[in-house]
Length: 424
Image (cartoon, rainbow, N blue to C red; front, top):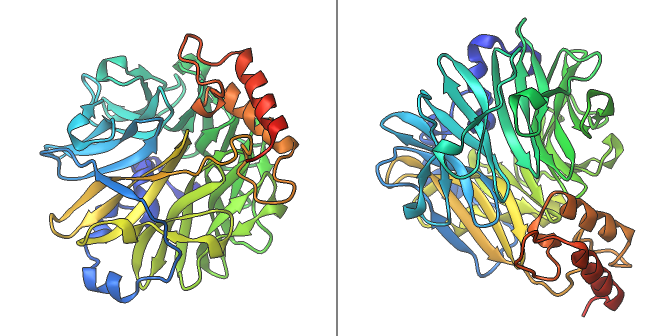
């Protein structure tokens, strides 16, 4: 991957190719048997009270959830052999086709509470795209200088992704709602770069430096680039960001290991679960990381809370018949955690969009960063709240108001009061 990719395969950039580097998930997952998954099932922690919803729309041949907002999910559904950007509101029947008029195909790759980001193929080129819930709301983010572009994530007013500007190379990119707002995030000295996630005013992805992919972090400009590449790793990429954490993967000892950072290369935490031969962390929110790990050749969706030992097997929550699964994204809002992804259903022979839902214990609201140390409440919680307020996160609606605007100075006072009161 990285700098060796050519323009001819730019259509392969979107998120659905990640598990195998090239080629959609169906190509590989369809070859994995139920028996191999059961034989190599990992030992992991489990959580009660999970709800799993199959979002696969009627008539589709494949689907996936790539992004989650507060009560909404975005991704794709294959309709008549064509990939269509999709939106759901928690049920298969709620499916909305976001494919813009005139587009040959499209896909939603990321979501906020109000927007969906992705790409649409206009003519022969893929264009970074933005929606607000309908196909008619489509906004073309494609920079005038680009040959192809993709928006992988959206948070608040920002969209992050990648654009090719010719010569067979890619540039990490940032937008604020229009093609004209495009910002080139490409770091000095890199030959290739991509932004794969955005949150709390930060962007993550990777840049190819001296022939090696290095996970990295930006704060809105090329000059803000921070190299997250862990010491001893041969390659690394960051895929998601939020709450002061970054997630992705690093090649350690020749194996891909799910990775967690907190703003620096030295903060690297290896999340690879015991017994796994391959893992990736793809999304992060509220101190929880999601992705997948491979056991005995089978990919299993899972989540972490900051360490390899914290791995929880989400695949075990799926009905009988699912041979493999991946968790792409997470959204924690109020008292609920939403995790979006896909699983291969051997009973239908399809990759199907899946939504995992779990209640969150809300015993300590002011512990915004979900820390577990002592003291539990620190200045980091204030910064966490400010970040969520700035990104219009529903968590910041501390006073529960329903007016317009929803977030006001009252929410700051509410948070201060709750912080002063401590945890129950």
